[in-house]
Length: 566
Image (tube, rainbow, N blue to C red; front, top):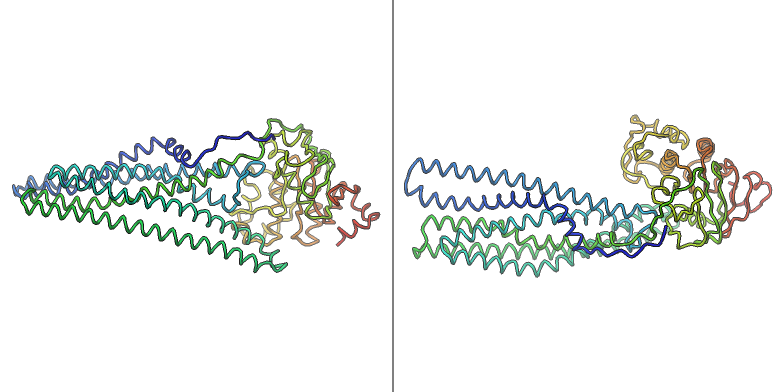
């Protein structure tokens, strides 16, 4: 994997333009239908005015029937155009939000993390709330145009009665939008800050939940709770600020819209009193004055949603613009599945060098837990290859020269804290739904008792993060998933720390049997797994200091006995 070239940044405005361009067809259809809806709604008070003007004067049943039929057509048009217009727009909105969520998630599936100053909880907020608010621009633009259509139609109809009424509507609309455009800028800035603070609070509580047990263990839970309370309070204060700004905006918009409607009604009444417009035109003017409250309200809210969409797009740009720390190479490993670590310097590792031959089962006993974690991070490509010394080879190829697909296909590093997802036992073991190796993986990981415990078996529901499972059950479920993947090279990091000694013995024996002929490396201090391995490497002080079978090391190495004997 090479150092990536600098990519052209993609600001929030460009993300919004991309969303609009991809949905131009749906937006045109939605704009036409919503414009028809607004035009039909505008036609309703106009029709009422004409009915009063002509039908009541003629007092003809035929004219009354035509009027009622016309109103029925208008009402039908209003109903159908709204229903289908919103269906088109909301489908496009939902689809576009999904596209951005997938794109943000794809950034997290790179073999190494992107160089972005956001925690996983914040990236989750970007992939959900910000993606949704960015996609809202697809609905905002058609609704903005259709509202403008309604206002223009209303102004033209009033101008036919009296030019002053039409000019009053147009001038009032421009004044209202000018005031609200200024206010919407503050909403955008406040919303962006609120989203950032809420995301930080979400990331903090996720960290707190994951580390709750160890925090209780060394008494750090009170300090952690205090830190979360601080970021949560900051998020609450900013949310109150945003709510206050939104409330002021909504109140101002409502007051200005009402003032314009009142002005139109009073002006029409005065013109009717002066005899310059007819009673039918007065009815139309008063009806339109009441009607334009809705499109004016919608029209005046659009700048706020535009600013919110832009603020969310800017946050998405933080993730999407961040270049991956490495660029994958095009190569694939040679058949066989050998793993070679050649002089790796990273963190506590000081030139670690060893080889696991194809089909061999090797265990690494790390005297310092941090060294095992550093080695697992390097093997999992959580660390960019160009940032550490030495090389790692899979199937004879340097890991930095392999494609992402090749890395994922041939090498799996299962962390000691593997995530458990909401779903079922089956979907956690076999996310792709291939159905391969599930039964053998369940048996090898000693998950059989969990499956047998529930009537649904493998279809037993698992809550998010495995909240309805014990620590040992979660660990065995994660191990079953790793074994079911059946990769050429499997690296397990402390896979049995949460299970009892008897279960650990059975798991060690089963894993060795199931992985026979496949390359397996286990980072562990478990005597059972160390004894099941073909050979054991001792990692001490950042280097490999000894190599032999578990039993030979027990017999001849006192430091090893103290480190692994239980």
